[in-house]
Length: 303
Image 1 (cartoon, one colour):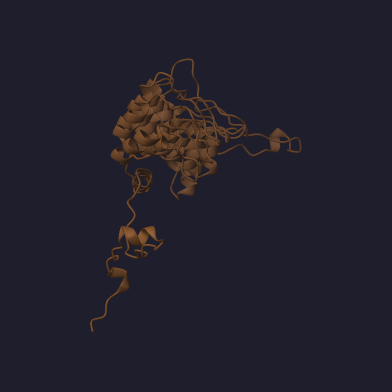
Image 2 (cartoon, helix red, strand yellow):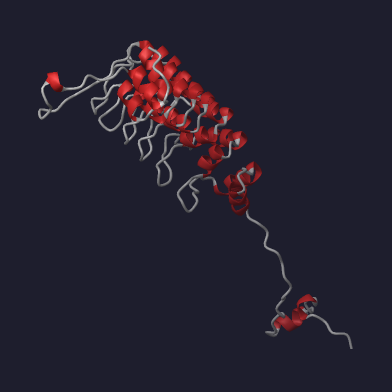
């Protein structure tokens, strides 16, 4: 006698008369795969870093609302910007239910922050076309979208944000401007872009938390960026909050190429003495910087 798997047997038919007498239909134990719902398909596409526009439209056709967020508080529109899904973004914007300046997640980032981080020019353009967008909103760290563009070294995003009115002088909670972050990343092209859009009345000053951009570049050893800053008009004798000149910083960090360039530009070295210092007649005069460099390199002086 053949053996059958009970899970594969068809459901025995039951007559209407038997059902009327109280007989129950046998339980159908056959496996029926669940049909994915539009919402399930939508989130699956989001986690796969793409956006299923068809699933989105089917869901909105049934529910007529956009109040759907993931477990971390990010909306579908935020994920559409993060995945650079232009069709989904345009469809959602046409519904006129999107707060484009809303902050999401633990960092309180906007959709513009997300788009700049990804670096999609088309996504950034679409957001900047919205009349009510605020390009200077900050995260919990004080980062504007322009800060993010400097961090990811995106020249395209930097240019578009500056053209849209982004303020390059805003500092984050550490006192860094976008120019500081571009210098930290060693991105010469981003630094050039920020300096090219520098208005005569604007200045990339610093707070007591950080250093001037020129000092920052020298300390990190970014010689080309240092040259670009000086050519753009940065004061090579400006002291930081520790009363150090750029040349002092170059000597401290042993940036010999920076030392040579600063000396050629006429930079000054700051020598300070406390009240307990000996009289001036007994204080040894500072050596010439070129001699100091030659001693460091064990070579003869050039002067």
